[in-house]
Image (cartoon, rainbow, N blue to C red; front, side):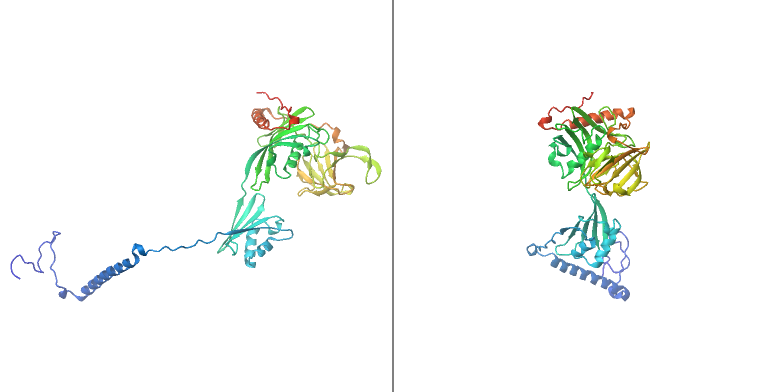
Length: 455
């Protein structure tokens, strides 16, 4: 080549980046250790481009060639419910539902952390959930009325968790007209919301509240009436977890008695009248709210012995199994079988007083010599053990070792509400009476008038 404008490989004229280029060397003059890597990299780049183009053409088909595939979802899990039967164990229930011996052992060991498997009683509900036709993967077990034990199968064993039963709170309003007794009153109000046997429990509670104002075995007359407002905690199955009166009004022999609950700070919950006077006596008038079948007497004909002898107590006719309550706080001095008394409990109280409860069918757990009991605590059940012709409670009251006739004694009431609590009590009283005033009564009791309450 000729001419000054022609470039040579050794030309050092500045390039576009304004820097001097080095002398260019022909490929043939480059050493092999430089040429081979460059060629190899170039080949890989070109080949990769071609491969990417080919794959792209295969993985991005034309729109008309796209096909939808339907994948069915698995069937939902199924739940089976079973109930523990008499004489049946939890392990046997699991065996019936196809659990292997190893799986039963592992599951029982987890349950044991919360409750002894042998302590489950007949009627406990077990729910087993799993794929249709397959092994259950979840077990829901009723620990008690208020909690469930949830167990889920994992690869490394059973995971457990305690689930609390949700509670719903409501207010129940009831009125009643007495025909012969509280148990057979003609009810009005929210009667349809009562569970089976629930009203009978309220009768016991109401009798306890007015035990020192009204003798329900003698003082109740036809035409008497009552109305109550009750706060309840309800489980999902409708059973009552807890209950308490918000207010009670009772008409008895032309007088109107009211009961308003109030809890002193750090104290027990008591009932008071509209003036703040306590309704509770130092002793309950009777341990069961049933009629007297045989009173205190120095000479009574004994139906079993067929002879006249002193009857140093009071007999209450009550169905077998009726709850028997301690009439006052005290300490148990005897609990067991004692001659003609049969199965009985004796309690020592203050001021040299002792009470006895005889012919019991059973004694409550924890009631033993030296145990402390509270007023109203259930200590046993009515029965006919010992020298008895049928189920009833024989109740005795002794003071300084001498038997006394409880029906004729004038025992003091508990202290009135202290002045520092009265302002709050009056606010609660007015609100409670306002609620209960809305309860309708049967027509025969339409003249029911509540107590006068000052504004």
